Image 1 (tube, rainbow, N blue to C red):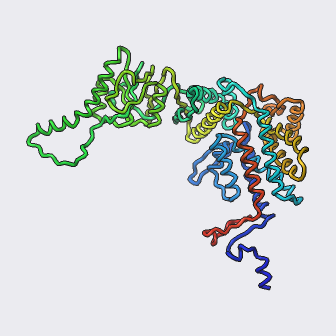
Image 2: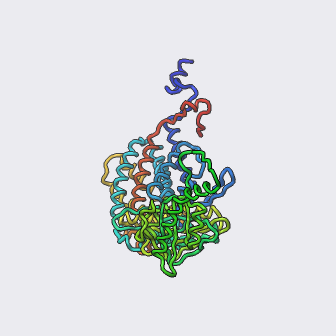
Image 3: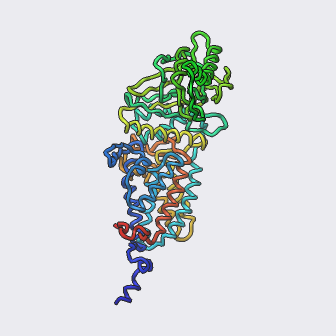
Length: 543
């Protein structure tokens, strides 16, 4: 009897009796179940009419979100396969800033579609080959539906931003942010240079409500002046951006000094201060040289400014700020003009920037300095306001995605019609292509094509319409030659191009690549082993 037992044991169990193993059919079922359950969680979030999820962390913090990426980052997922799928989808977000929810839906649906073929004993490898063929064809379909547009056009950029923001926030707020996002990208865009999203400073204020979020063509610094007598607001200000040590520095050598008299000590102190004072006086001289009546002078220093120096500045009516962030120094010169100076020897009227209005705004303990009315800014600030921390975070995540969506559009130079239009188009395209393929691979193409339809179906379902009716209506409209999507207000087909509902080209492209690769990988797994070294004692739970 014992011999027989050894033969039926898996070879791995011979080597490690504590390991847990799932063989082919069960392993596959586990993977498919994981993908389906993850899909079940995110399914209701898709699209502008999707629902919210409330995440409560261990410490009781609440986060309300419908952004797939935030959910997958914050949720505690224990199943190994689900973690794998979640990571792939968050990679999608890191690269393109959008499309996480759709990605998970497509992966889950592809595996679900494959399940029925595998039950009829089609080998997974054949399906995987079909996926590969289908992906390449779907990418061709993507190139056919893309709309080449003038990406400098603010109207187009607002439509792209609106489509992205509507899936993350309520419509009133999305409408308000749409304009802000499009405006900030057009502000920082410089001809023939890649767009650097870091040049949009995102500042947050716990204040009023989310709809009071502002776009500041200039800069908002998150710290104020450091001296009570300094002017709190300056009109027509020259701005000196510098990184100069304006504080008394101890000598490098630790020397003990003995003084004969108090006078001598006095002279020593004066001499030590003289270096710093001389720097401050150089800046004050420059101020006197450039400022006429009604003009003022602002110093933003990356280094420290000690009380003595602050006092000298205050007497001259100069507004000085110390220890600014390095990124803000870059943004400041882009916003207000001028150049950043590292030593007092480089001071001249040419290095100064200019702003019409610089003022300090105090909220409770926090001080903010607004620099507004700058000439030709290439940097700007989005000031997000909200009553609670979690509402501010929700807006912040959405703005980040909105900015990415607009940037993608400018980089791609084209857009894709939204509202599920591309997915239905690709499905029809793949169906025609399937006829030309010989052999069993066509089953994989069928599975992949059917899986794409989950997007329009879910959009319809989340908006409260019958998914099959909606899908058939879109398909009929597309067979008449219109690339139609689903109007989520009415449940009828519509032309996304006329309504301005656009998706990003690179988001869809990335989605097709990721979902086909991941689905293939998961299908080809035929054995799951929990036999890592540390796992010997508590093997992985296998339900």
